[in-house]
Length: 273
Image 1 (cartoon, rainbow, N blue to C red):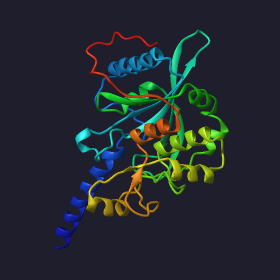
Image 2 (tube, rainbow, N blue to C red):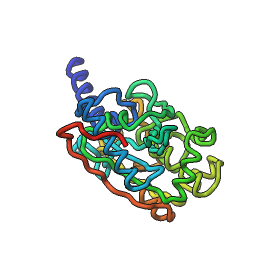
Image 3 (tube, rainbow, N blue to C red):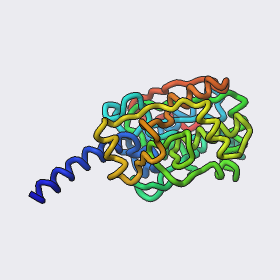
């Protein structure tokens, strides 16, 4: 009998784990290797993504990827991780993008996070679908972001208590999308008071309802380390690609929002911009 119970529990846990990973499998962890693309293909896709942004004259974009097949994603959620891409030009005049992330801490199942800078190649490694979601803020907000990202004030908005489905209306937990929202609220409303930032988010930002199914919604916070519902008074709501874009549009700080599609490269002739 005990063996049957343990087997049943293991089965339930496995189902919950799969559902949770659908939200954030490689999304907010640094992907050290690609599960879909070769090294050369990663280089090509990264170069093409940079070229796309340069062609649109973008200084700062918010780019989203997903590490899970769309069929395994919760309804309405397209991407599992977002990051700031910031254009840089070196002394030789070469243009590239630095990628500024909030990543989960040690391992994929961690309830802590940190701020990290890496590159487009690292970002590409974490996707297994052929598109990125891209939000381009207004020129005015891009200028503010470029000055702000990487500063002590930027780092001060990071809350290391991590939950995949953090509630963006309070300060108990934070995920990558909520962190980017906090940064933009801070700049748009010119405040570094974190309690004020969260009040403004509650007033002006409409998060997305996320469900993994009624049973999993109840059990996942009890069994999976990086999922918590403690910061939700009712149904789970969190920040997503779509809701961040809608927020910027409503505030008058959105230049464009689009899904950039790329095929698995047949060759590797693309050169970095």
